[in-house]
Length: 345
Length: 260
Image (cartoon, rainbow over all chains, first blue to last red; front, side):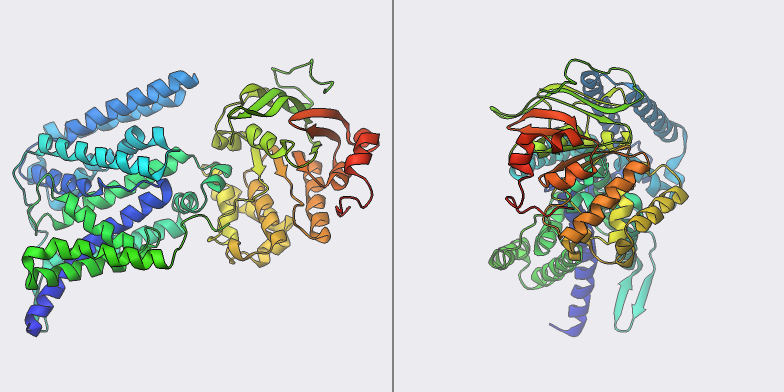
């Protein structure tokens, strides 16, 4: 292998690794706060990329109808819960908020010429369509089971994954889509030529990680999420509602997933089911960090990206096998130095 | 049985902040608490003493909302709160400091305290800063350690932090579970002095203690809880001079409890 090929593979590995790293962060976040192994994480990648693609092609994205359906289901679930508890006041506000939000989105999608808008307007619009699905999935699938075992939650995750992939097929269709590149420029860096889009992916990923770090370290909601992950009883005792930390972590996971999809959509053709494999590779990275450490998860995900790039050069037929086989030694190593995920106190 | 059993409050009363009426708690088939009646007056300290396994921790957990109540009612300032979620009770001004402390071990002392004010997150920054300053005034030791991780604190400092964190939500009623457990006598005295100081500022306290001598010294009212039932209720003085209590819980040197 010549140095040029090595550099090229390295570039591929880092770009993919950056995406896996984002997904790994989301998986660690969701698991540590809610104990849910979030298999459907990858679906948000596909939803994000495909929603943006639909917007750019001037089609109203199916995500809108999905969002409407899901919000109705959430309103029903909340309504039944409020009837049982005998308190409906906050519910009315939530309903009014939902209705306003969906009406606003509908107005934009039916009246505005969004296809001709620049990407920096289209991207927030795509996020506004996809991200609210995250907390809704938590509310419908996981919140009623908040006390269940990790295994039960994992089984629910498989079901949610299958449901979201099927809905993806229904709303986006079977054909793949690509979005316009943020920039077509190519940069010469010494001997390698780097695509501006690839650079964008890496820079955005780093920026997003920095933003997440600031959110966890500086804001009261970020600290509340860390506290919920660290000590569930303690978090409840200071008045952090379980539902709030769950919804918040799922909203962040959906945001990270959708942004990842938007970042790679210009360089990869996305299909309704593309996200699953990406999510799994992020999961391998997260496992290396024991589903607990954010920095190790990022490092692990980068490693997955690099190994994948090398494997695709040497043994492309076995690419996925090699990447997923990586889990085995990691699990052996982790089980040898058993480290409990329980709270320190 | 408690002499309070017959009366009950459904509207805010001038003197009673917390009224527990006929409370029952079950763990499966086991009845952990049966027909428990307890009242905590405004600005008063009520102590619940009793042996291990009597249901004292269960009582506090049920009042706070960590455990479901199988029977009975709980009123906080005239509002029925039995079955309410912990976080809603915190917002109503009821804070529990459990025996296990439940601190955020890998966060700093200051972060732990600031999270204590999470229920006041819509209040202004200035208000929360004032609460933090107040917590540091009450526990100067915590200010010295403000950037240290909670998991590295000593037992006494952890108890101070747990208490300080509960105070950050500006509670009207504080539920304290065994604050003296495992602490050196000097620290116990310091903590109990803080509790007495809270009463002076109008905070009511429901104190669960195995250290009956120390608890009865600072409490106004007291209850003896045995095998899930209140077997004796009255003023702290009355309980302290009751022959049964003296025999079983205040017997000199027999339990090795440090007095205050």
